[in-house]
Image 1 (cartoon, rainbow, N blue to C red):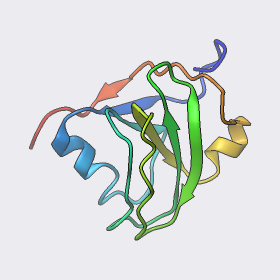
Image 2: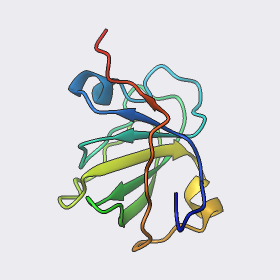
Image 3: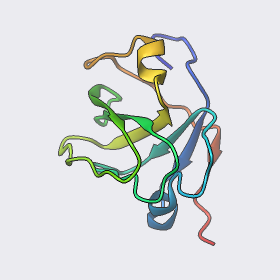
Length: 113
């Protein structure tokens, strides 16, 4: 949510295994995947580019980047969570650094296989 507007549903990964698995093996993503805690992500083994949004503990957007397959980001040290979403979603939302997002999870993917 941003300013009371629901932007998209969120799937949440909070365990080490769920965060490591992330979007691997998927052909696409509907909504966003929230990785908490998270400061750095990679796209090794992914099939499609994504938007990555780093946020601090208050949901304030710290950095926004496009991540193609087979890449790794630099860490964002103040980040407490990361949103991974379909390519172009940040620009469609008009998202910018400093915006504050409220993430209300729809599904939690905490179960270790």
